[in-house]
Length: 433
Image 1 (cartoon, one colour):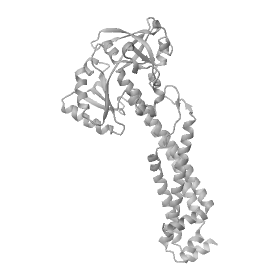
Image 2 (cartoon, one colour):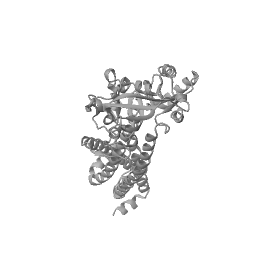
Image 3 (cartoon, helix red, strand yellow):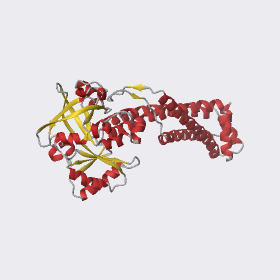
Image 4 (cartoon, helix red, strand yellow):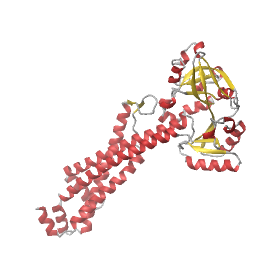
């Protein structure tokens, strides 16, 4: 350790009250910013995993060109045939960033209990793929509240004797006159019918069993959401295809880069298909809208907090240095140059800021852990049901916040000390008196 470093650390300890007051300002502001950032990080992960996995969008969705807007008007023209799915899966399999794929069939229709019918928006998925989604580490980490517990029957179990069993939300079950848990209903109560127009335009209906419950996580979809085995909906719509192919990537994969490569390979194969990322408002409007609002609101609060913290730090450090005019004059008198004196005070501020930021980071992690363990529940707008208030202060995000605070502290200390050390020595000593 250099002489200047030892002197700077000794000065911090010698001026304990001044160092403590300045450090408290840095710690309080940095801790608040880390906690706010931790909440934003959690919500972003929650919304992303909910959109990609729970609501079966995939990181990338592969549609027929124009299928996003045109499918519901003309499903015969814009659906993916079994041949299309096979070809595109062969292309996707060549991409190392892809974890797995699953075809998703969407459609509208009616759910009836024999006496009452309600409109539904149906999703069809292979039960084996749904089991993989529900047990995925990303889902377990960020949205475990949106999927049934592993020991609770769900659409992932719709095989064998349960091959015709469908899943509806609690609200949709109530609308059709059935109360959850649906697997406790009598055989007669569980017997329902699905009716819709086939892709050829004919009316069709199939029998199904009401046995599973799920949630979409989105309030606007809770009254209409129905999830069924892919084979059930294919029978209902008289097709062997799907609406789109959901492509799930490895967690570290780059979505935009992978999507670009897949689109190039699809175009080279002469397929009339398009790739769409999950964060495109064409298929992820709720995700895009919610995150856009959150970022604007969070940015505003971060700006206010950061400005208040910066002003507090600048004020504390400026007063602290101005109170030490005699010390500056003494250092100059015993032979320290202007640059050396200014650097000594700047180095002292550097150590104080670094120590305060480390304490603030530890405090933020401790507070976040305490709050998370308390399982505080709240009802955010647009989300179905309540959710836990969670903060996840990411280390890299905290480091990113620390950089401008460090810069502000260093600039403040250097400018004020530089201005003072340039004064004549006699003036500094007289000013101190």
